[in-house]
Amino acid sequence: MKVVRSMVTVAKISLFFLNIYVLAVVLVVVLGQWRIFQSHDSAKTYDNSHLIIMRELKEEDNFKPVVDQKNPHPVFQNDKDSYNPDIFEEEISQRVKTMKYWCDKIHPKTSDLSVKSPDKLYHILVDDKHKMLYCQIPEVAQTDWLRILLFISGKVNVKNHLAISAQDVHSKYAKHLKRLSEFSPKERKKKIQNYFKFLFVREPLERLVSTYQHKFAAKYSKYFHQMFGKKIIKMYRKKPSKESLQKGNDVTFSEFIQFLVDSDHLTEAPLNEHWQQYYRLCHPCLMQYDFIGKFETLNQDISYVLKKTSVLKKINGKLSSSNSNTDKTLHTFYKTVSTSNLRRLWKIFYPDYSLFSYQYPTVVEKLLKSAKIYEDY
Image (cartoon, rainbow, N blue to C red):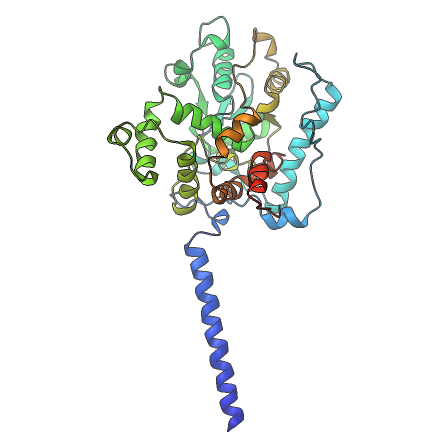
């Protein structure tokens, strides 16, 4: 009899802990802690492009791209855009290999991007004349590339591409830019197979500072003030002024970051393209890109693409008008962000860091260490 009672007691205890475990799992899923496995596509047309990278893969694998910490871009010897061709070829080859490595780990079977829904192809521009596919990413010299594509199309009568205003690029002349989503699946497939495919990326957290400067701090960016600024101020400012609520033009950087991490964590809607992750915009594991350009070596990389597609001779003068933020500037902005949000930012953007060969952000490392917080990645 005692044995039976003991067995019943053990069964009850086991059932109790099993219920606790199930409840914990349900809470984790509901609270969105496994968001990297979720799609932001409101139509739920999953294409697995969100299954890019997992922290476990990064920790257990010894694969690391070779990068000199003191000089992460050793290709270029001075400020006059000169470079060692052999080292340059090796570096750009390594960029593609790194991306392919992580994609192969998580995407052993690549699906066909050409048959995906049009919203998946919206950011990929088509130049049939020069057989190019360019995935545009806001705040990564996007306007400069659109200027180039418009200029070499011959449909805009100007002396050089930089003479086209940013406003005209995105409004008056936008009709001349064709997107891959506009073509039939059969035409898309043919272009993907035969055209030179490229994209340009940038250190992700540096890009966020640029986004804030252009979309929230800039007085002219009234659309973002009205669409996002007023909402952010209402959500996160304890005692907002009436003027701030009406204009939305004085969002702080820390408020912007709070909005970003909360948006990624709490909503199903995709992040705005100006702070969306690169892998969600360009689907690098579904599109085998031939070249990955970097903002940090912008002019040299633009030149490489133009040479590769035989259009460099059509371009006169300076290739780009874009500039990077300094480490000092990054520190000034990110020191206003809480340590918890710095860590959340890393978790949101580390797929891009791995895919595109970027090191763990120095600014985050320094700020967390100063707060005596040491990450294990």
